[in-house]
Length: 108
Length: 113
Image (cartoon, rainbow over all chains, first blue to last red):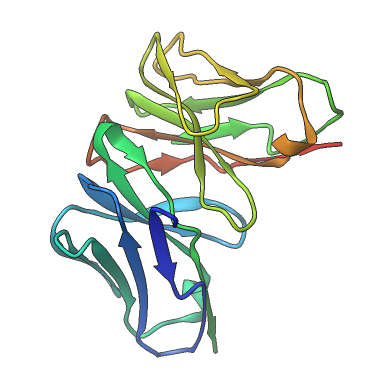
């Protein structure tokens, strides 16, 4: 079993829809990162959180440490949100374990 | 700031050749790491460094060497390329251990024939 499970693997939405991507992990962590990989391949950090909830614009990330679960939400989705979203729990020593990613396509 | 830079962007090698993938950052980050990304798998850690002169192995270190002579540079050396090393390689840096934002380079797409 992978240490990090993301769901769904693929997600297609219509512009304006509310989107949720889930991440479950089995290891103890000090923080959890959400990353975005654009079609061109570049990876950018969206969030790093160790408890509760964070919000940047239309993106919201939540984490429940006891349940070992995190979610990434996108409100009012837009075609430019189309990308791969990667969950990466951070274990002690700043080691990241990566999920396989969720491919999101938002159609106009 | 340029952030994290990687060269080359693309490379084709023949089996048995050696080469060095370059990575540099100008943010004075102590922590640097190399990952490979393969289809159907998450990013996997090859080697990492917590500061100049200090390196350690990650999850998939075989066939790769690293060194960290300066804070800025963290080159990855392929000693004798194999087709199994065909992948996209990402370098990343962060300010320090635990709970710091990760900054990724643009990646190097390597094909070994």
